Structure formats: C-alpha cells, structure tokens
Image (cartoon, rainbow over all chains, first blue to last red; front, side):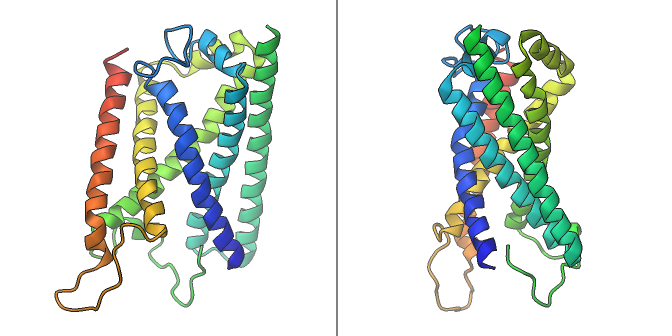
Length: 125
Length: 145
C-alpha cells in the first residue's frame, strides 16, 4: 500500500514534469508558426535542418531523455492502474507488472540511445 | 492505487461510460483515461519513428515520408487535442489531489452541497481552456502553414 502511494506521488510529479517539457515540445512542433525560435532554418519543425539543430543542443538532448523517462513512467503506471482495476488474478498481476517494467526499460534505453547518438552524430557533422 | 476491498469491479471498462447517473466529472474521468491510452500508444510509436534521426538525414526523411499525408496530419491533430485535454484536466486533478479547489468540509445540511458543486467551475475552465488551445492548434495545423 505504501509502495503504491509513493508510486502514485511519482506519477503526479512525472505528470507535472511532462506538462512542462511536453508543453515546450508541443509548442515547438505544433505551434511553430508562433514559436519559431527553435527552428532556426525556418520552414517546418520536422525539416532535417531544424531537427539537426535541436539534436546538437545539449539542452534538448537532456530534456528529451528526462521527458522520455517521465512520460514512460507516467503512461505505463497509468496503464498498470487501469489494468489492475479490472481485477486480474494475482499471478497475472505480477506478470503484467513485470511486462510493463521491461517494456518501459526497453523503450527508455532505445530512446536514450537515439537522443545520445543523434547528439553525437550532429556534433560531428 | 488503492486495493479494492470487497467490491469487485463488476462494471469493468463499461463503468467508464455508464452504469449509473454519471455527471460531467465522470465523463471527464473517462475521457482522461481514453486520451491517456491514446497518447501512450502514440508515444511508443513516436519513440520508434523519431529514433531514425540517430541514423542521419536520409533515414529521417524516409521515416517522415512514411507518415506524411492528410490522414497522418488528421491523426496528429487528434493527438494534439488529446494532449491539450489530458494536460489541462491533469492539472485540475493534481490540484484536487492536493486539496485545492475542492472546498472545505461542511455539515451535511439539506440541500446537500458536494465537492462536485465546488469543482464545477474548474470543470468548465478545463473545457474552455482545452477548446482555446485546440483552436490555436487547429489554426497552426491547417491555416497558418
């Protein structure tokens, strides 16, 4: 019970961090007509020149990884709560819990590699 | 998450939509969950797709070409709407969790006032702010390009 309370508190804290970082990400990507400062090449936010410019920024590399971790935890813990509320039997609950942890760790490692590798690649260009 | 004690969740997912005289708060609860699941699904695909930037310009452009076109733009706008609602409603839920905007405990005197009455202005605010953000997003997606 206490463990769940702690996880729930982390779930809320992760939500607040996501609000900040994903808010910035969404503004850059989808309000680029209004917030153009992170798209130095002009045009669309997903044009390679803009992607490369953000990728070589240490600020964006670090915040991508932070957002990745916070969003994976927030999303997968939320999914776990929804699944557990449906009342699966105990062995299934354990398996689901472990499966979600493994999926989360796998995606975190993969996403962190992508952020780090693109930071390194664009620095060397 | 609290453990259920003696009250199994018989309604299951159906309980998100019906099973009682639900008020607007209940539908916000359901919408919060639905948008959360949608955002999680998109996020997993997004991690995989955008990781192509690590492989260079041609890999990135190839990935982006695979998800271009009006259907994907429409889908992305749905994601934006889900984000706008989930984020703003999430702030309301965090405030409620911290005891803000839920009123003080009072004597149960008829006509009874509940926490939902105190929350109603916040619910309306969430919907208005979401609508405003979606409107600005729609202009950016479809008009200011």
